[in-house]
Every structure is written in C-alpha cells, then in structure tokens.
Amino acid sequence: MECKAVKGTRDFLPLQMQKRNYIFNTILNVYRQHGFLQIETPAMENLQTLMGKYGDEGDKLLFKILDSGMFLREEKIEEFANHIKASEVNKATKMIAEKGLRYDLTVPFARFVVNHQNDITFPFKRYQIQPVWRADRPQKGRYREFYQCDADIIGSDSLMNEVELLQIISEVFSKLKLNVAIKLNNRKILSAIAECLGKKDQITDITVAIDKLDKIGMENVLKELQDKGFSVEDCEKIKPILLINGTNKEKIESLAKIISCIEVGKKGLEELEYVLNKANNLGIENIDFDITLARGLNYYTGAIVEVKALDVEMGSITGGGRYDNLTGIFGLPNMSGVGISFGADRIYDCLEEKNLFPEDIATTTQVLFINFGEQEGDYCLKLAKQLRDNNISCEVYPDCAKLKKQMKYANDRNIPFVVLVGESEFQTKTPQIKNMTTGEQINIEEKDFAAYFLQ
Image 1: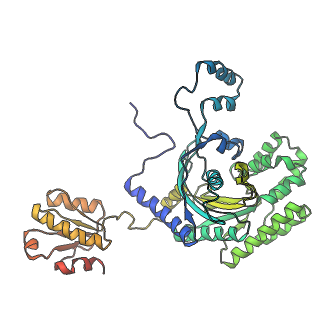
Image 2 (image 1 turned 180 degrees about the vertical axis):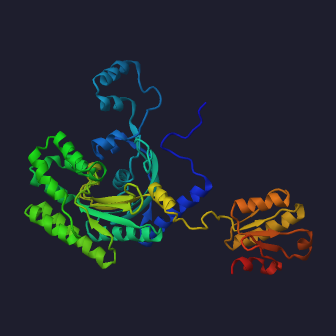
Image 3 (image 1 turned 45 degrees about the vertical axis):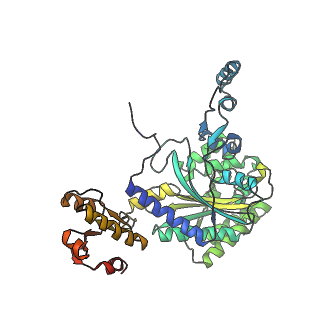
C-alpha cells in the first residue's frame, strides 16, 4: 500500500514548524500592532458562496466535496450521465457536490461580514491565518494546500486604509529581512484601458491576459487577447500602454495623456497618486506602479497590490486589493473593503533559500535536566517547575539512561544548557549547570538557580 502525503500537500517536521511559526508570529504581531482582530471561518463553504467569485479559471481550481449518503439516487443517475455526455460539467457537479474547500479567505470573509454584521463594529479590521486549497498543478512555490495570512479593513472607503496595508507589508518584510518589490496598480485604470479599446464589457478578458505578462511574454498575451476576439488593431493600441516605463510619476503622466479623458481612468490615477504620495511620506520607497499588474480576481474594484521577492525565483508572495461590493452578492450592498494576503508557504521558501531564518530558531528547550535516578529525578522536577514559573522552557529526561545518550539528545535538540544532579549535587542542593556551547560548568545554590538563567 502506497503511504504518501497527497501530491501538493506536505508534512511538516518540528524544525519546519518552528520556521513557519516564526513567519506567522511576525505577521500576526504586526497585524495586532495596527489594531486588527482575529477571526476564523470553516474550511468548507457552500459552493454557491464560492463559485463565480474568482473568474472561470478560479472556478476550475475549486476543490468540490462529494455529498455524503445517497448522492446519486436511482432516478438521478440517467440525468447525471446525460450532463456528463453533454459536457455540462457545472450541472453535473451540482448534482453530487454542494460544498467546496475555500479557495481564499476573502470571499468567506465577505460571507462572514454579512452573517455577523450586527456583532461587529465598522470599520472592521480583521486578520485571519488559515489554510486554503486549490486544485492546481503542484510546482515550486505552488501547492494544493497552503496558508494565507490575511488582513482586511471593511466598512470604510478611505484610501488611508490602502496606505496602512502598504505600511504593514513594508514592516513585515523588514522584520523578516527579505528584500521585496511592491507593485501597485488600480483596477479603475484597467477599466479605462478597456474603455479606450471599446471593450468595456471584456475587462475580465483583458485583466486575465495581461496578468500573465511576466510569465508568458507580450506576444503570447496579445495572442490570448486575439483568441478572445480582440482585433490586431486593438492589440496595437494596448501594446504601447503596457510598455510605458520610467519613474512612478513619469508613468502616471504618460498614462494620463491616454486615459484621463475617461472619468474612471482619471479617478484611478488620482487614487493611485494619493496612495503613492502618502506611502512615500512614510518612507516606503520600494513601490512600483506596474500598469501590467491585474490580479485576475473579479471582485477587485480599486487599488491592487502584489509583492515579489528580489533575488529569488518565486511568484507573488503577497497580494491584495480594494473590493467595493463583495458583500453585495450576499445581500449587504455598499460595504467597501480592502485587504492583503501574505503567502506564508512561498515566504518560507524565500527565507530558506536566502538563509534568513534566525540562527537559534531550532532551539525550543533552553535547559535539559539529566536523569540520574529516582530521587535525583524528583528533585529535578522541582527545579524544572521553578524555571517554567519564570517562563524558561525545560525538560527532564524521562529515563535513567546512560549519560552519553542523554547528552547526545541535548546536542541533537540544540539545547544550550544541561543540568546535572548526581548524588553529591542532590545532597548539597547545588545543581551543576553545563553550558553546551562553551563547555563551562558551574555549581550553583538552589536559591540562585532560576536567577542564573534570567541574567
């Protein structure tokens, strides 16, 4: 029998969990410093909650959950078979699956806000660190199960929220010591570009195509647009727009000449310039206005942001944007929100590749008590309680094993201090402390024992 983890999912060893928790704790501490409150939502949602929120490609990546029990009653089998034969996959799926694993944390959050609108105070600042699932093809930096670390501000359309989220991004990566480029755009600008082409109703086709520019190149993007019904002339119009370069100010000025006559484009440029100026005033200088940034999620309406690590071959490690009416599809209109999501698994891979995890990250236990026998072990348990009462992590080795074996355990676990209480130390109540790094050994009186580790 094959005994492996499902492809695209992973087991995590203790050292890996230490590193993952370092990332999670760094992010959640920044969230808390900015006044965000933690929530959780279920792993599964009703399919009708999820479907249609991520575009056609997103819908294909949703994990559907097979209904339990007699999901195909005898009278339904023929109907199900007919849907399959006719390639009516969505209709067939609805017959056997009503639920799905969440694709992201944002759509479930919108559902959460609608369900609990009378229990929370607006504007509501939420953070959430939970796994999500996508039926994607596993590859480097792309998994079927992975964690997202989201922060959202909902119930306010102030652009100060975008500025605060950019500040959070900057603070997190500064603490993680990871060099990144923050890319910023505005969905209104993309809408104006579509309007310039006379393709206002095909904004989704445009955003899905140009969002792949970094991956497939300009010619393939233009080919994809042509496959969607765009003419060669349309492609010739959009190509110079996507190639605009220079400083943020220069790019805004160049684009303004093309789309500022369109009201939605003018508004998008104004919002973008406001956010860039405020972020610059806060000393966040690694933000690049990227006209090609689209993030192909249907619910974005304003600012969109994406973060990539420098000097590491990796896709987006953080993303997000403004959504003006996501809750409207669940019955609560005019509830504007904006959010970001850190991809913890990709951040992990980046830190690992750049060797940026703290050197002492493998150290969880500070002190190991060597077990020399029953009465010495009992005494060590009392000393261990003293240390734990002072928030010092420690262990008493459970067996009276050979000293060499116990010391090897300390070395393998990177435990920096070992306490030895043999018969003489027990009689005099002067435990011996060995520094495993320097080899120094010292006997200390019981009354000073805990204080030694608090220096």
